[in-house]
Length: 430
Image 1: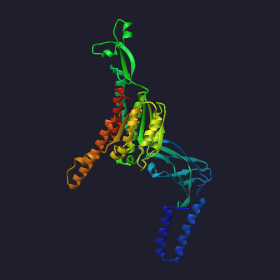
Image 2 (image 1 turned 90 degrees about the horizontal axis):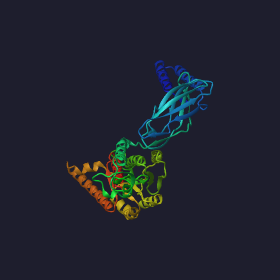
Image 3 (image 1 turned 135 degrees about the vertical axis):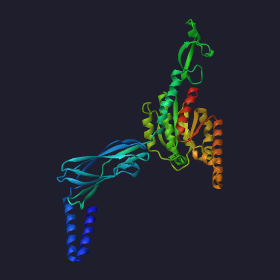
Image 4 (image 1 turned 30 degrees about the vertical axis):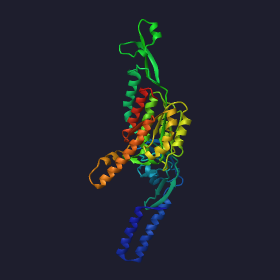
């Protein structure tokens, strides 16, 4: 049984009437009428346990975007149902509206829509559907909770998608409109054309020239079908928030832009997510399915509050890619962690693969380093300058060992990482 606000109002009015008459008989009469109305409502209200509920709609929603899940309630009973329905979802699912009034005729059904605007990645299972069936007087009714299994996977938002057209235009310029005329490491032969003044004589194809009356030169284009392994560090530092978003989410955004660009370029892209163990692995996804596979795997990832195991990362990369490829490690430039964990393994990785590290820089550190307002600001500036120096020192040590470094704020990391990939591809260094 469930009482409504109308029952409370009736009780309040009855109390005031009793105080006015100051009569015990009046009190008993009022209480009896209210109790009779409550009992009548509970008896005449349609049953809840016999209802059949089912959900349908979106199963995947981008973080921060809107999705819709419909809830169908069938009433097989002989009485119409008037009441309130609450479609239960976790708070982070951002479900609206919270409650809805419904009327379901006997033997009929009703469909209601719930709008979801999720605030966190991951799987969001639908909770219980609570139905309150009210009687004719709306003083009380029956209430019950029913199961309607449904789950929505909240995917990374991929805000950097807006940079993709620009990067694809640069890729087309590399691959189509302007052929590389220099024989570079890792370039592919494209076609022959007539020699013009200024062409590199090393590109002359003497055999083809001997069969023609003109001197022919070979043109080259960036290699296709290269392999890229993106490694997400899901360790402790990836949980830190920079510019309002977790480092892990910013790294995912950069990884998605790079994966979209590389797959369009004809390269194969794989994903590893590692901290103290391998949390996710996407290997061998088709070029048309890369983004779907990546977002599905990233959706359920959370930062683990443990130090990452760089030895495990190196082993996972070497086991995944046995031939030379580009390894993109998205981690934090933490001097102590990298010096103890990654640097001892750089030689082995660099001997087998081309290494590129992408890191999320905190713009607030630069602001703190420039502040001089008062004594507190000066101390903060000193701490920020020390942090910047440590970051620069570990970056320099990594560069001396042949590692490319991209260190940028969250909004600039995805395009900067894509630009680094395009530079390597244009230079034939993948």
